[in-house]
Image (cartoon, rainbow, N blue to C red; front, side, top):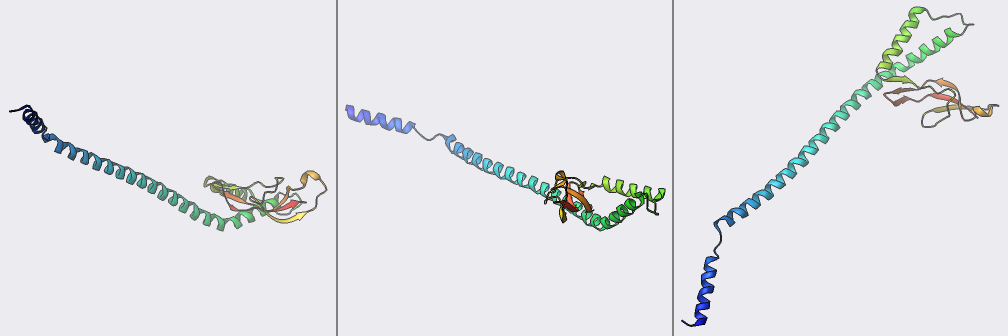
Length: 176
């Protein structure tokens, strides 16, 4: 054999020894399975996050529904509270022949405390700056005192908040 044939044989022998490893097929399968696993983990995390958002949304909607239901009931009761307020205001006047009896006064206080524990609060508007987002102006009255201009000088109908949300705006008279 000549030298050239010897070199070609050596190349063939080296090429023959470079066979595919039996593990290369398994490595490729392992890589594919790892890719599938990553995709499934991603899908799982997205689905889990979506489900958590769904639970939060349903819970919020449920609370809103409960608050709305109580808002409707309280809006129906507000005229009764107004009548109580007017009667109490009248009985507090010294010149008035009518007086709140102790029992009626207790019922009045108990009703307001129960509604207060449910989140209802009366808005205090008298002598406050007029805010069109918080108050409903029914009249403007000229005032001589400069400090009263732009302020609420009388409340015609009380406003109420339920859990911090205004359910009825106070009707007020503003100094001009």
